[in-house]
Every structure is written in C-alpha cells, then in structure tokens.
Image 1 (tube, rainbow, N blue to C red):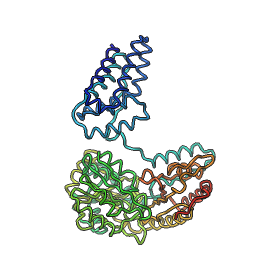
Image 2 (tube, rainbow, N blue to C red):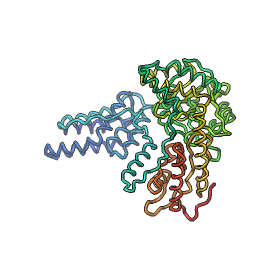
Image 3 (spheres, rainbow, N blue to C red):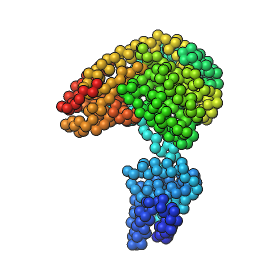
Image 4 (cartoon, rainbow, N blue to C red):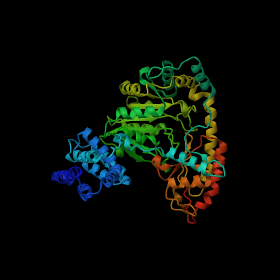
Length: 549
C-alpha cells in the first residue's frame, strides 16, 4: 500500500500541467524524493526499517510542508506549491527562507493547486499507511511565523548566562533596557495602593475610566494644544498596545508604512503582523538622525498609508523641531491616504534648548494623526503597563472594538495611578523634573566620555535616556583570544565578555553601525561602565584607525 501511495504521488507531480511545472523549479527534486521512498519500500526492507526511514524523512519535513499546504488550502491559492516543495525537500536551515517565499506568494496568488493537494496526501497518507504515529502539526499563521524575537532580550539573556558562568562574581552592567532606574514617584504609588485598599479591582470601561480620560484630554489641551472628546481617547495596557492597534486598524495588507531609520525595534514587527510593508528611510548622524521632507517625498507611492514619527526618538534621542515637522506635514497633506502615527512616549524627557511639538497640532494634521503616549518612561512606570491613544473618532472607534475583544481594558489600579501621575503638574511636576535633571547629568557625562574614544561618532541626545554612538570604525578589527569584530553585534559581545558591559547592537534599530546605550540606571553605573569600556579599548584600536569625530 505504501509503495502505491508513494508512486502515485510522484506520478501526480510528474503529470502536473506544464504551466505549473514552469513555475515550480523545485518539482524534480521532490519527485526524486518520492521515488527514493518508492525504491526503499520496493527493496523490501523489513517493517522496522521502513518505519525508521519514513519517520526520519517525515519528522523533519512533514510539519512545515503540511503547514504550507494548509495555508494554501485556506487562501485558495494557485501556483505556490514551489514554496511547499522547497520546505519538504530541504532541511531546517532553509526553512525560514522558503516560508518567507510562501508568505509572499500567499498575498498575491488565487485559486487552488493540484500540487498542494498532492503534497498534503504525501505527508498524511504515508504516515497512515505505515502505522507511524502522526506528528503534531506545529504550523502557525504566516502572519506571525516570521516575527523576530527581541534582540534586546537576547542580549540580556546572554548577560545572565555569562554572569552565571563567571566564577569572579563580578556582575555585568546592563545598559540594554530603555528604562528608568528611578522608582515610580510616591504620590502615584500611593494612589495605586489606595485603589487596592478601596477594592477598585474590577473591570472598567474598555476605553478607560472616565476620570483618566478626562485628565488625558486636559493634558493634551494644555500641554500639546490638542482638543479631543472623551470618545477620542483610548487607554490601553501600555503605549505598545496602542501602537499595535493603530497599525493593524488603519493598514490593509500590502499597504506601505514609512519608518525613518534608526527606529524603535518594535515598529517593523507590528507592520509585519498587520500584513503591511515596511518602507525605511535612512537618516544620518550628521543630520541628527532626522527625517527630511525631501527624503519622505522620495519614497511615497499610492500604497503609502502610514508614516511613523517618534519624537523624542528611541534609540537616537532626536527631537524634531516644529520647523522640521511643518516641512514633513506639508508633504503628508498632499497624499489623501497618508496618515501619521506619532509616538510621543518620551515627551517630557527632553533637554534644553530642545522643545517638544506634537505633529497633530500643526494645521491640517489633527484629522490624519494618531497620537500615542503613555506613562512608562516619563513617570518611571514601565511595570504598570499604561498608555493611551488620541485620534479622530472614526479611527478610534474600531481600535476600541479591537481592544474590547482582546485585553478588555487597562488595569484598574494602574488607571487610578495614571490619574495621580497627570495630577503632578505640567510635564510631571517637580518629581519628573528631578528625574530629568539626573538624566541630563548622566547624558552629559556619557557623551563626553564617548567622544573621547578615538573613532567613535556621537550625536548628543536631545531627549530620552538613550545614546546611539557609531562604532563602525572598529569593524574589521581582530582581537587576540576573541576573534574579528565584524559588526555591531560582535562588538557588543566583545564588550560584554571583556568589559562586562551589556549594550544593544544597532541592527535591531535599523542601523548596524551603532550601538544603543541606555543611561536610565544610575550615575554610579554609568561611570563604572565607561571605566570598564575604556579599559578594553586598547585591544580594539588598530594602528591606522582614523579619528572620525
């Protein structure tokens, strides 16, 4: 029976119409694989050997092939069997690339394919006829299959591993997470505790409690010059959720989302999950990493749907001037479909003379801007998970529906704490002002020490508690006992291993020449970390290194 099934599968593929064959360059290797199965069975192996052979063939490949085929069946696609063929006929090292091909094809193809039905039968009937236990189908939706893991978390995990393995007991200094080292201001904590004591622990309005939305409306009016109604505010579990809901709500599959580089690492992954397309626009350290109107104009098409602006920007610390935003707005308003997603999470962590401007406050932009903000960075509330989105009613209403069907709403206790945070005064009052003063001292110290390193280019951040120095002058350096510094990731691993300082490679932010350093922790850690880095720099320094300040 097994022999007949395998031979039948091979014959069906061989007899596939020529139009399909021409689109399936990997057809012959798959036919060959089925014929190999036939040969093994035909050679009259004993039952145990046949099962072992089939198991080895199918265990590695059946899961990905079936996953591809099932997705093809659901989408009624045509001529995408080649991606499934490749997944079936290759090892795991090539799996990602072939699934990428499949996902790309699935958005364009229509109809059904004889090939996919053939592969599905090959994967299921061979297992059934030989009595081999069926493997669990671990396939997942292509929308999420290629979402990248966080490189920030990867570096933190590596730091933890090295700490455990290090007999010296000297811990690695972690400059990875863009997070404040300060505790949440006491008045905010007390309000959260009071909410607990008062039993404020049940479901709230999905869009957020009335008291908090009123406070947000007041804040936006007074601090940003923006007027919103209560039903144009959506409180969420952090600004990240607000961003995700905004992207998935307004973008259709295939829409283009414009993202200036360097960017916060989460943006492209959100675009991918929305089945839209990321279009990056490179910025330069020589221009303060700021998007220009001309660069924006050059990439816009009729598919352009969303422009993401982050000011103050993570990871660079760039703060867009009002003049720069006005120039960008002048381009945006010429494109009816183009909206702006303005991420302003670092709004009040800003250093004079820089000032913050919300792009929605520029004439003609309120109607086409989705403004995201939150409490994590400014109020040192990363663990409270509280953010919000302000947008015209027509955009916000469907976002609210998504939230109601996913997370229901933000934590009731965190919302009460958010009311207290906004009640501290303009820009967070004296509590936030004290934190910003400390950040600025750390920033000035760190920038000065980085600028003193030969070959390192530094843009002094105008906001946030991140700096993004360019270390590319050291790429290609060979270090005895370590190896060659090929890129930012290798450099970060070098610093982690030799200096015991953990930083984040710029690749995940769209600029592989730089590394991100967060100075949110403490001045003590900043000083100690820089001393460690300076102590190992002589190992990196090539004799011909130019000074590229």
